[in-house]
Image (cartoon, rainbow, N blue to C red; front, side, top):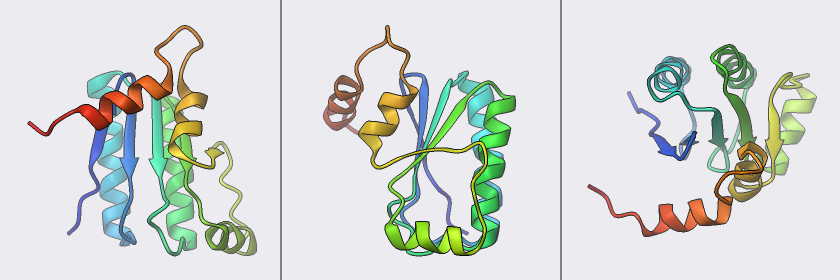
Length: 134
C-alpha cells in the first residue's frame, strides 16, 4: 500500500498527493493526518491534489471528512492544485466539499493559512527549498 507523506512547515502540515489514491490509501491518510495534527499541534493543513488525474465520489467525501476532522482538532484545511477537469467532475458528481477551502496553488494556500503576524509564506517556501533531507 502506498503512503502519502505529511510534511511539517511551520504550523502547517503539507500533504502532496502525487498518485491516484486507492480507497485504502485515502483512509490511511485520514488516520495519519489526524494523528499528526494531534502530535504537532498544527493549525493548518494544506492538501495539494495537483497530481490527481481524477477524484471520484469516495475521494471527494474523504477530502471533506479530512477537513471536518481537522476542524475538530482546531486546524484549518485548504485544498490546492485542483485541475479544471477534476473540478468539473466534482461538480457533475454533486460533490461540493462543504467546509473545505480551496486555492489555486500552494503559495496561495499557505497565504490563506498564515496568521497576519507570522512569517511570510514566501520565506517558508524558500526555507523548504533550501532544506536538505536528513
